[in-house]
Length: 129
Image 1 (cartoon, rainbow, N blue to C red):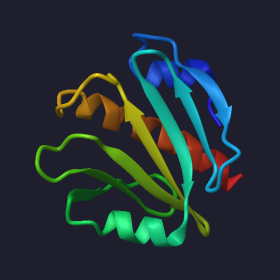
Image 2 (cartoon, rainbow, N blue to C red; image 1 turned 180 degrees about the horizontal axis):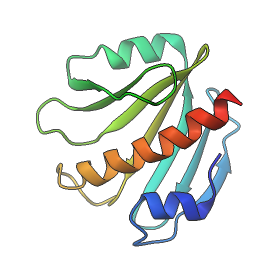
Image 3 (tube, one colour; image 1 turned 30 degrees about the horizontal axis):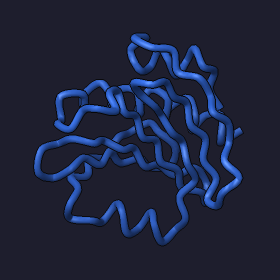
């Protein structure tokens, strides 16, 4: 979906994130990581997509220009842990970026959300074929 360089650049270039390969699990996912940070793209089934995007524990903001509809979810309490959910055709996807595995607050949320959105635009275009 993306090169290691694209993922590393989207995450700010502070550490090189390497593809760990697609999972053999269902639903499918792929992860890029380093000791400090990671980024994942996964397929989300209809029920999980509906349940997660409607969960009141998260604040949902529409993000135009990514697939057939995208929303950025953040924790309602502090705006942390952003995760981008989007649809292309009949399939739903989620992108999660974590800039610092040791981080517990919302300090990295703007950078994480920016990475998710820039890579989401690339992914949606490629998934559309």
